[in-house]
Length: 147
Image 1 (spheres, helix red, strand yellow):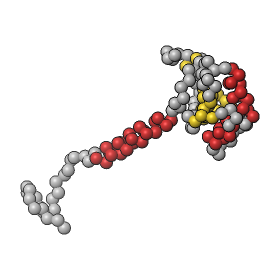
Image 2 (tube, rainbow, N blue to C red):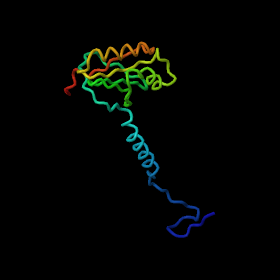
Image 3 (cartoon, rainbow, N blue to C red):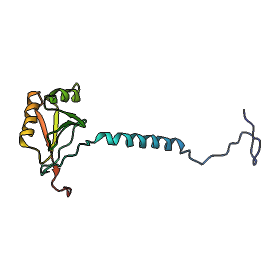
Image 4 (cartoon, helix red, strand yellow):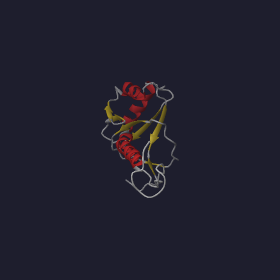
């Protein structure tokens, strides 16, 4: 048992109420969450720059983990941020989707507006030959004022 050593009146078992809120654990948790989001946010974006053509279709919701193919105007081909070739596209794409079914997986294609149509069709044919039948084309929003 503890004894009251000093202070005002009352019995030795009288404990004064503490009205201060301890916010240290709350601040610690918030700082950890902030660091997690600061590290994870850049990983969720595609960093291959292409100039997208304007699209007027209504945007559709993205799947949980979308797979993007980017085709630049010089013909270079990327899966997310990893460069690939047309010959390796099917194998690299199957590695990117993991255990998911290729026939059910939606592949998003980002293509520079100055890309040759023959290069684009080569990618589309390779996707079909590799068993990927659900393809979505990504375009820039027509209401967006960017170039």
